[in-house]
Amino acid sequence: MVVKRIHMEVLVTGLTALAGVVVAGGSLELGVGWTGSGPEAGYFPFYVGLLLALAGTANAVWTMVIHRGESEVFIEFEQAKRLLTFFLPMAAFVIVTIVLGLYVGAALYLFYVAWRQGRYNPFWAAGLGIAFSVGLFVVFDILFRVPLLKGPLEAFLKIY
Figure 1 (cartoon, one colour):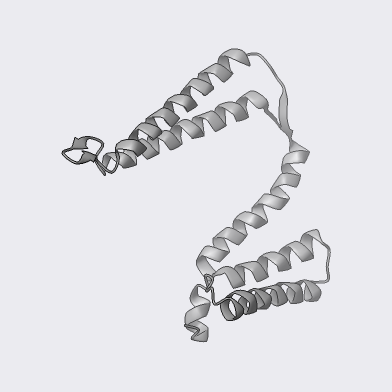
Figure 2 (cartoon, rainbow, N blue to C red):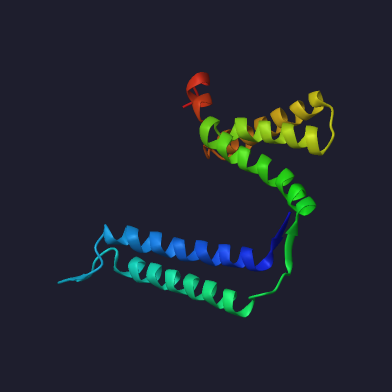
């Protein structure tokens, strides 16, 4: 499987246009007109969203016209596979952090990466993940007094 450059460029420009439409649509809820005291809250975001949507659409059309017929390779299957071995654990880290908190997410992420990609012994990898999370807690929560997201761990350990 090969992904061509033109396909990725059209995808990115399409996502840019979609982001502009979302911004403009969300601004409609705030009002995009003028009042006696000036513009409503959604006035500037609405026009920025329209500009973004227009630019994304124009770039998509431009890309299809200029690069039509080209077959430059963007990424090949082996490269994509290597990229996914980095991206999938990172995406799982984000999801686990949102659900279970930063400390659990960091411990699990470091355990997995050290074990699977670093080829550490699973016990050493678990120790690394736990030590890093404890270090995060000591530095941020205790020394700097900056609470990080703990998720359900906070209620379980009664840390408030």
